[in-house]
Image (cartoon, rainbow, N blue to C red; front, side, top):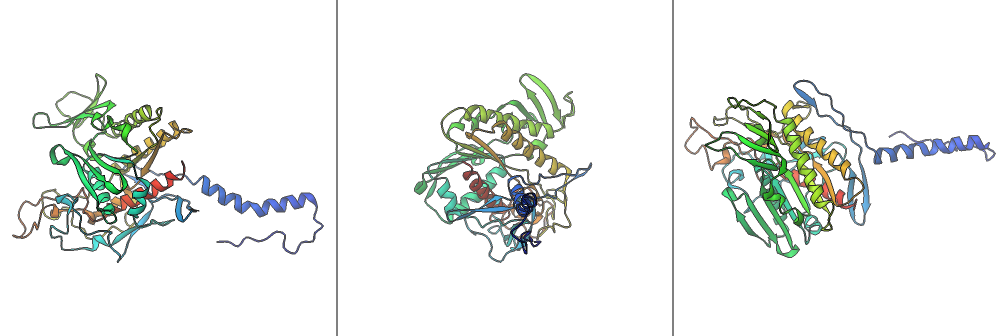
Length: 428
């Protein structure tokens, strides 16, 4: 950092008034600049081409000490790298891990994937503090809404909280594959729920009779929407289901479709549809919670996380990596991943402008697309099944290169979530 020279050094006391004012301005100029950087950080800048979107970002960082809690007021957690950390995960065993993501129990032979932590470039990301999280959400209700990656993140959070408080129990379970569940933490009177809603908006999932999804972009999915008045924090995580074949409605009108040969509808892709799903969701949340007195609702979007298939999903070696990518070798997100990320973040920006000045609803993004992109080693791969090579390598080997091992990289999503929540708490 450059040395700031005192303009008054070696000066006499008989200084003309105009010169004195000028010297005072010079003295305070560095302070003004620093204040501007803290309050108005540089915006994220993108440089896009046909195939990739540059993910380098500019960020300013500051911290503010509030009581005994040192909180990062401004930090770009999306910009950084994975570094080896011998400390390892917060937990190793947990009874809420979905069987297909319990990589250690299923015999994954390497364990280096457990010993990487995310290091932001311009600030620090503290280790997850389960006690702090529980204190913040005492007497409150948390809901994760989305697809199986929302469930993946929820189960990570439950495992991390269990390292401090194990007095919680599953009090509700419904649907195939436990798609709707609720846990109750007795000591903190806190509920944590998961709602299966892969589009956020109303939709009909594809089936054997109809091999495409049907989305109704003008209304949210009431399976979670009906409980909006009970929620204090809702974490939204969707994306991969939008890549499938689908027909899109707005009211009674068909807007178009994606990958729907033979249906005689206009191909419109899924990027705009993805953004529209968030737009409808946010508008509905504001309409229902922005005008009542049931308390503040924090809405956090976990951005799209890329898959890492390097071949056919049912062939050996579909996601074989055993260490993170070097950030210098992978500076650009794939085009689709970058587009999905940007559509969600843009809707968060728009929603925050809409609610500016009121404190009933607040929107934030946990931007993990780049973090996830750099972790091809973090997936279960063939270890979605127990000991897949006990009888040798078979011709057909199922691989999961979408979800994340627990413990593993996805625990970092919740470390960032906690920091985002702490920052939001300071703005009440």
